[in-house]
Amino acid sequence: MHQALESLLDLLDLEQIEEDIFRGQSRSSVVPRVFGGQVAAQALVAAGRTVPADRHAHSLHAYFLVAGDPGAPIVYTVDRIRDGRSFTTRRVVAVQHGQPIFHLSASFQTYEEGLDHQADMPPAPDPESLPTAEEMLPRYVDGVLKPDVVQRLLEAREAVDLRYVDAPPFAFVGDPQPPRSQVWFRARGKLADDPLLHVCLATYVSDMTLLDSVLLAHGRGGWAVGDVVGASLDHAMWFHRPFRADEWLLYDQESPSTSGGRGLGQARIYTQDGRLAITVIQEGVVRVPR
Image 1 (cartoon, one colour):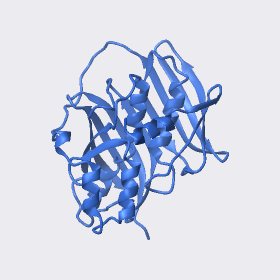
Image 2: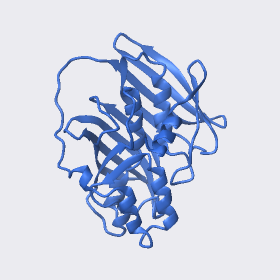
Image 3: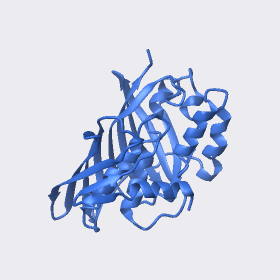
């Protein structure tokens, strides 16, 4: 297993400090705050550890309240909102320095047979035919990205093999594109057969590129370039079908709207054989620096 993936799994292995209270550590990201996907994934871990093993996450709804401090631990308190015959609901509040920085509601369900249909998977090239981040990102050094920014991007994503179908937003600075982006991703190593772990890994990755389509629509390179100021505001996910985060997943993303200093991204995540696994929606602050 890749060392960076081991480090990420350690971050997700929360310390239980009291019944329904957990503590997680952090690490720095591309920007000087805790990566939102990390907080969301850790909160889902905390919720999942209070739920019977036969109930799997089917949705989460979250709000990012305050930027997290990567130098301090995060305490997650779980409220057991409901334990029904089929569904279990949990609410999680993440606290740093005595202040809530994030809260999440998650719902879990026992397996049921039922009606089944899905949107078709869009066309996409074989992920193995696409360049890795290590091959792609250095191409933009001395063009739009500084060497230290490329290094931080590589370090932030080294636990995951993430490959753009087309070029990333910073390849189109000043050249607006259709508000759509696709990436393939998978963990860099074999994961345990724990459905919660795979859901949490996908939650972690889901915050990496979802607002790229917003940036593309306006010819903005993003936080790595510095031509916008942004942060995640809220995040919602629905887990439709079983999947493995250590196998290729297609993240098909688009932006239907940007206004009022906020941009909306929505996406579908498919398994390589075409099953719709996850739907994701996120709104974020997207401001042009004054």
